[in-house]
Length: 393
Image (cartoon, rainbow, N blue to C red):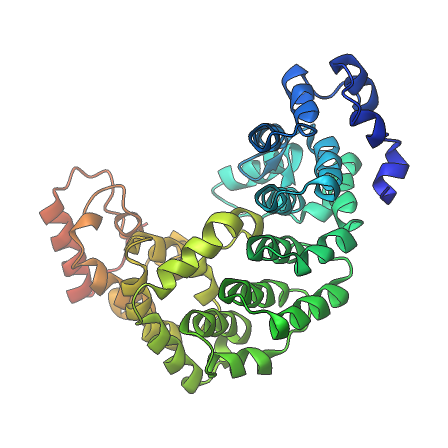
């Protein structure tokens, strides 16, 4: 029995005895509706399909697009308990990732506060609130319950399934308590790990936790230059770009570019990282290049765009990496832009898919909603590049 179980007096043994719905509601409180009570019952089913559907149902009740709903706390406790009873690797993986979303989510109240700031044009883009500082004390209980269970999650680093080990690393990357202990365990895992994609995940872990703990940059640099497989080296090189930022060496930038130019590597990394963790970390692969100096970003950008074209349009690079807000461009001429901004505009001028009023580039140049044809938009972009015309507000 965990500390959370003791504190909230949940009798899991009774729940496992096939109780009727009203008895389950009495144990868990009346916060769950009849469909979720049925899902809790189905977690004890011998059917993998029913247990999977139950996890999905409970997750959808607790979490929606980064926001935690009212039943999230009790569902968090249910998931932590289910981890200790579940035998199927695929369901263990699912629960670990669900908990990663929960610990990174924000309460409905804090989401509303953030949206109010976002809708005010006079304010800067609001940062995603730290869920550990949730406005309501009951919302903070979710994060406390997960972080009290870190030892349970650490045990999954030695699970026989590589997918479970990956999910455990992703969840642990979202935890702040015992960060030194977690770091040591994940670091140790790398040296004994034989699965390629688990090793890849370790470097994404290093990148993310570098925001709040010291990581071994020399190890990351050594692996990026090692005889490991190319996809492991690329994950290390991307982590190094994020952690070292403007201090990264020319040698390591050249290694990064060389690895980006190898076919399909970046696409595979995007599939491995972005889908499961973009909502939890509030990052996608592109974001890991955002700490580079403008000179280095300009050097990397062509290879990054070429490697990414199957997954992300140039507009993604405009909004996420190069022109983060329109304020960065208003009143500037082409020559006054940064090198990476100028490079992106030149590349954009050759991409006909961007010549429409919905594209971010056209919004940056204030070309949207003017009834321009695609050809006229292209001419406007080329005119801006070729003449000393400031971007209007």
